[in-house]
Image 1 (cartoon, rainbow, N blue to C red):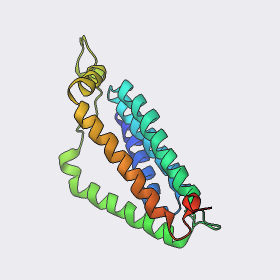
Image 2: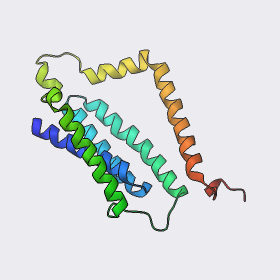
Image 3: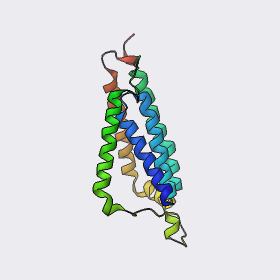
Image 4: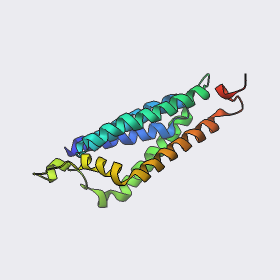
Length: 173
């Protein structure tokens, strides 16, 4: 189980590096999908099956809609790919940053959190992720509405930043 979780964590880091080093939103969308898939795998391996499903469907769906809309507004005729030197340089720098931070924190984090929830508790009545969803909707309604407002604000900011001088589909006819 530890090797499987380590493989999922490595895939998540590679997906995040792919998002961070990609200058074109076309290729960053693939990194977002990979990072979300590997993080959902980590969550489900730790016992949060419902939470990982919700994350994969809602977060990934929302992010891909934003990325697709941004890509439509900023369509480049020849976008930079991951094989370009500048993009590879950023990817190597980010990977070296991950390796340096891993070496720096290796002694304190070794073996922490490598067991799933089902391995820790042998006889549980309620699953933690299902009862957590009930807590979100009963006591966290304000935080949920605040997060929805922040996502809407982020969407408007991204669309305004990517609009540029061409004004895209928002131009007057």
